[in-house]
Image (cartoon, rainbow, N blue to C red; front, side, top):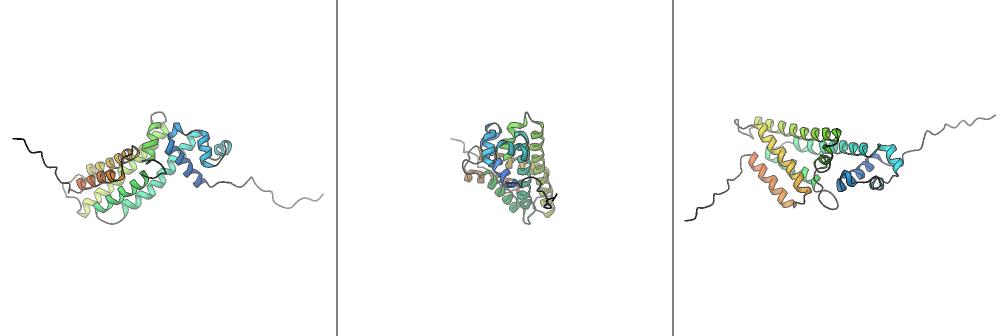
Length: 216
C-alpha cells in the first residue's frame, strides 16, 4: 500500500484580518452603542457570519471587551506621543487636546466622542469588567497628566506654589468634557475654544472676565 507522503494541512487559513475586523466591530459599537449593535450588525460589519465571529472573538460581550481593550491600546499609543514630546507645557496640552479631538470627531457621520466614555459607560453599571476597563482608562489618563504637570513645575512652566496634581485633574476633566460634548454634537470650533480656555487657565494666562458695570 502506497502512502501519501504529503503533509496534511492543519485547518483552514484565516480568511480575515483580525485588526481590520476589530476596527470595523469598534465602528459598529461606536456608532450604535452596545445595545443598539445587534449580532447581525456585528457580523455584517466584520464581514463574517455568526459562527465565524463567535469562533474568532467569542460572544457579544467578549467582542465588546476585546474592542475596548484595543481602543485603550490605540489611544495610549496616540496620547503617549503627545504627552512625551518635548516642548513647553502649553505646547504639550495643545498637542494632547488636538490628538483627543482627532479621535473624538472621527467617524463618517456624527462625531463619536471617546469610545470608553460614550459607549463603555452605558454598560459599566451592569458589567463589572466594562466598569473596570473604563475606570482603568480614566486613571491612566490621570497619571499621564500627573506626570506632565510635575515635570512642568520642575521645568519652571508652573510656579513653585502651584498644585500640579490639582491642575492635572483640571486638564483630565477637560478631556472628559470634550469627549462628552463632541458626542453631543458640539462643533469643533467651540470644542477648541473650550480646550484653549483650559490651557490658558492651567498655564496661568486666563484673562479675568470684566465685571458688569452697575447701572446708575
